[in-house]
Image (cartoon, each protein chain N blue to C red):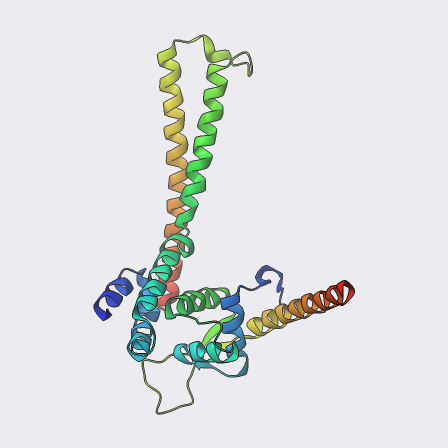
Length: 133
Length: 112
């Protein structure tokens, strides 16, 4: 069990690990004989999830992709239902429509993902700087 | 004057941690034991939840690392203390809870 706990601790982000892993392992050693070790492992797994997904800001990728998909959906509607939403480009060839639609989707996805990556990287750098003093 | 609005209401884990630190600086294991004690065994805080929340509280400036007065203390133990901002936030949340309890009492009295 201790081996598994150590493995889980090592999977945490570096800044968190450097700050708290020693103490967490010490508490595991102190409490493993009175607490249920499975509960401690579960607690550590929840912390792992929260650190990578919530605290790092990685969860922002999900709404970013959802936003990009919505934009793509709106563009597709504009392309394929010119009577509902007038669009001057609907007279072009269907292949050109599809290609430009895919291009727009790709650009939107790249921009949204790049923005998220930059935000996450900046946060990680800030946290690492704070952890190193 | 600290603006406490962005921090209130506090989550259960955060409230318990800040309450533990209101009296004196404590180390992580001490916080876990104190939470168990003051909640009459009803709220058990695991080390993962504790340190995840401590990191958030330290980032927000509500908790800071403190020096231990205990010379015999294990060097692996780090002590944490409330900052002035943390104390104000705790005070604001306790006031909020008091008003909730007052309102609940008033409504329950009317219902009976």
